[in-house]
Image 1: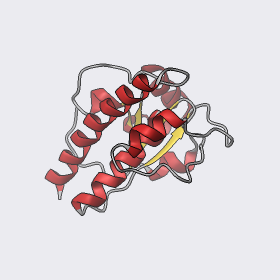
Image 2: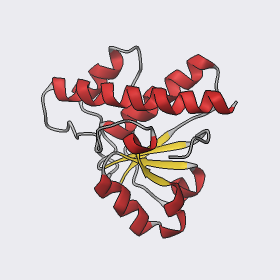
Image 3: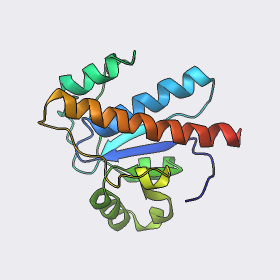
Length: 156
């Protein structure tokens, strides 16, 4: 995968309730801590405005000192696809959906873990599962965010 810096990552999952907003908050908190100007956003391929972050995901973020307040689910749209320099999907199916829906942006649509040079393929969806599944998903996202920010730091 290319190693260009990613200053405007767009994290994408299904509902924009667990994985993608967690990745957004992890990325933004760490970028700010490092003094980087890079900022992330998130969305879902099937998000609806009323979707909220589950308490288990909120707890996993809170344990890391990261607030999940004020999150509102957002559907993937053309504006976000124009804004981002890398749309990073949690699953192959979501990546493929984005490439089909936004073919003009297909070059910047990737599978998150693959793009970050990490093994694992898809990031498992913790929705409806016990707290341990949410913690595991956030831990995977933490590793991905660290890889993205290392790339950003090399590029600055």
